[in-house]
Amino acid sequence: MKILLGLVLICRMCSVASAQEDFDQLSSPGLEPKSPPSKIYIGMTGGYGRIFHSEGISNPLNNQNFDPARSNSFFAGFNGEYVLGEPRNSESSIILKVYYSNLTTAESTFSESEQILMPDGQITTLKTENIAVFKASFINTEALYVRTLFGTVFSLSGGFGAKFPFYSSIEKRKVILEPENMTLKTADERYRSEQDGRTLVFNDEEIDNINYYGIVGISYNIYRLWGKKLDITPSLFYNFGLNKATSTESFKINSLQFGLDFKAGL
Image (cartoon, rainbow, N blue to C red):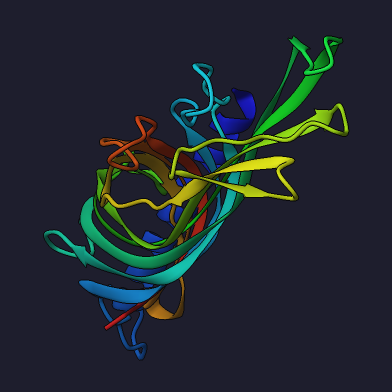
């Protein structure tokens, strides 16, 4: 807590120093006043995210769902900011973002063991592993309202976004571990057999919905350089899914994002 208060105090002192510098520029003879801050900024955004599914992927091979999947994501794209009110005294703005996000492969597994009767009358233990593999990439669009926090260089943000599927795949497999002479067979057309019947694969699914999500976050507005024409803003956002990822699955896609924005004033 003391560290946070210290950071806020330092940031406040920097803001006061900046204001004093602007005043000195205006009041000192022979010096040209600085150009006013821009009202419109455009630039680039990028960062890292951690993906959390709200619940596990369904398992059509039995009634037990997979554990909720986890994966990393990376994103990069463009953003723009429109400062509300007089730029020099404004404490709020609207930010629009368009970026590409790629999710690393998320895999969830669980094993099963059961006693079965073999054709020769012997009882043996069947051990299987159920695997769900989730891959996806999206084109994201976001609209955020940003408000300065108590006149400091910290800001709170809130808004909404939409993920448009660019590529996606959800594959579910059941693999026999033991015994070695056992195979899996089914007449269901939704499944295909691999590895000489040792693996049963549920046909690949895709994310066929536009994923809408809410956004809340906090950002740190580093002092605008070059006459307040360049803005560098690290931020932390939590995105929570508002609808199901697919028409057949009930999980939603949530994420925690660490980002860095670079914006130049027009």
